[in-house]
Image (cartoon, rainbow, N blue to C red; front, side, top):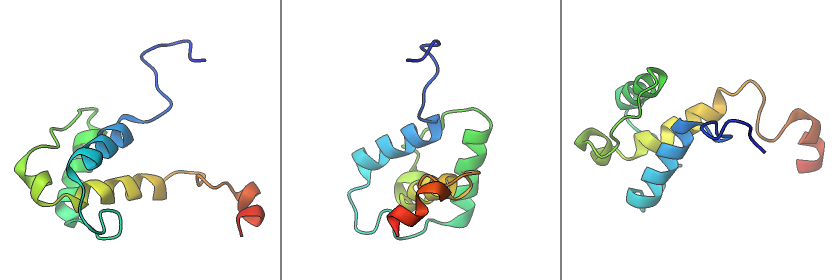
Length: 92
C-alpha cells in the first residue's frame, strides 16, 4: 500500500501513452513499427520536462507509432529489465 496517494507505481509516461494507444492506436503493428525519430524525441522531451503532453496533437495522431516507440524506449532504458536477470533461466 502506498503512503502517498499521489504517488503511483506506474510512471506517467506509460500511463499516458498506453491510454492514448488504447483509445487511438487500433492499427496494425502499433508496437512493431517505429515512429519518426524526431517525434519520439520531442515527445520524450515533453515528458522529461515533467509535463503531460497533449497526445491528441496532429503530430502524434498522424504518427501514432511514435507513442508506441516511446513506450519501448522507456522499457529499453530501464536499469534492470522487467523480466529480471534472476528469472531469465526460467523464462528461457
